[in-house]
Length: 218
Image (cartoon, rainbow, N blue to C red; front, top):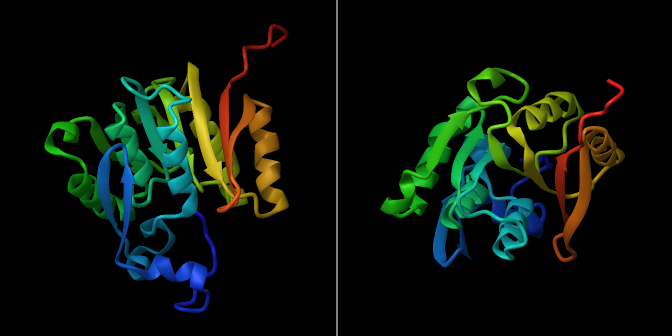
């Protein structure tokens, strides 16, 4: 999730991040996501990119039902929860400190008959990737995970490892700085990248990527 400055009540646009919960209606379900900025910071609030990603998934322009999906840097788990409600089998991942919080949100927002469609799992980008099947996911999702340059190389390695040859990566992000466009340039060296959606109100872009075919000269 995105790292942005936050001082309580300093900016009206950010005050919602301090609320103990955030409510949404996606996939014909009312969702209530717990938030805990003081305990977990950026990993425990719902960012606009996650909301826009869910809006895009609901449009039905990417096949979700029946797909093997994985969400990276899930935070509160909104995107993974909505993806499961839309019919995918989802692995929802984040770093270890966020997992209990994430698991609680998943349990609270998925009906009993959907609980089995979701696994919450630890994943630090670029590390321990062997625990996840290479090319094992048809849909790789990330909302507001492009913001720290030190993570770009391990994130790309993770995307390459997880995404199947016929799968797609969906990234929802705000383009804040030159480093964000630098990441997209890095991504284009390994994937075909297309902007498929833009929410002007929230200034969030959604990019769809799929693996480039192998080069014959390599």
